[in-house]
Length: 324
Image 1 (tube, rainbow, N blue to C red):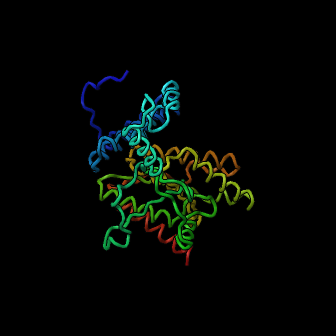
Image 2 (cartoon, rainbow, N blue to C red):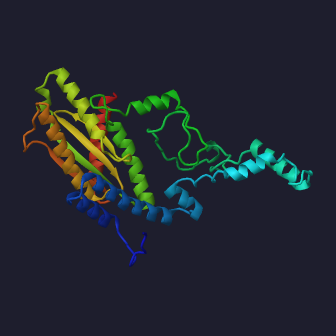
Image 3 (cartoon, rainbow, N blue to C red):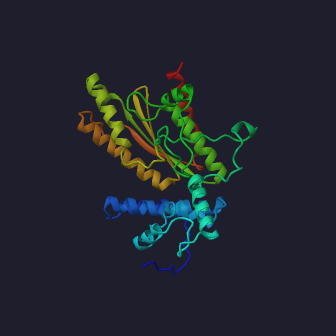
């Protein structure tokens, strides 16, 4: 039974991250802790949507609960009664105006089905070239495939990117691990910084740096397999909005997780777990990293602006060296 809350609940982003960290550090099973985290993040998303967007009650209901249910099927008794009467005839067998109107209405309804969702006729017809000087925002949907319907309105269709754009997308993948590379970090942090300034939100970076020496002790084949398997494991359990980057910078492997809508406390917890997880994986592959080697840290924007800029400068240097 749903109960009305005793009072108003107000949480800042930092309070939410602290609460999420406490949930994961509690004795709750991992599945339950993940569900509680999803509920907390849904709270922040809903507050943000109500503050920043003009949503009707119908539109908000659709976003939260999906499309409305289909009308119930006609009872068998009514269906049989309807079938026994010819279209356009009254119960007494005579043809009336109401019967003819019903038949015409049914035929029109079948010929021109009403679209579900999307723009009303006559709106949204201008192409992107009509909006000269408008700010362009990059929006990726890498979990969708060409030909699928738009998950929001159910009418639009995802089409293929031009060959040059598709090539640029693939160029953001790290060859060793299958994770993202330095160029993707630059593009994604550009996007997150613009979003943070525009909507007064935040994002964090969890950084793990480990020496390359232990992996170099493996054979070439073992090293390639280990890095590829590490990339696959790190992708498991991530939120769809999180991005993990790997680069080889001289004698150091650098892993960076880009965490939208995540404060400093949540990023620190994530970074510690990432560091522990990578070390445990490498040890199982015979590439043990000594406890004093390597480092992990977390950065939050806004807040750690200068450190974020320094990290971006490092990755610009790495990207330039890879593509010269």
